Length: 64
Image (cartoon, rainbow, N blue to C red; front, side):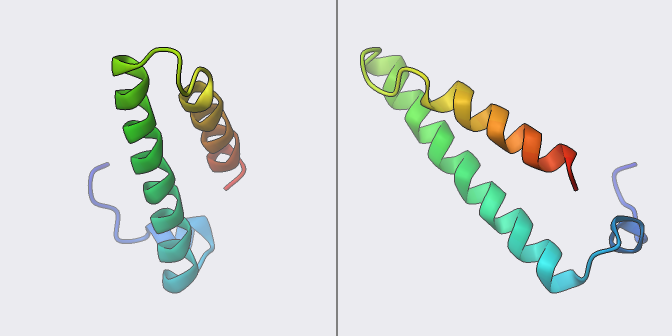
């Protein structure tokens, strides 16, 4: 569902904690996106940064 007004209640988390958690993940994803672009242009830099970072984020999100 695109809009779920009961998301925070279902996740059993408050607005502030949820917001901080999501903002942290968003900034990590932005960094990983930039690292991916750099790796695409210079393949000898950030060899495993993106794949390792995405796996870590996926593991963290699955525990929410």
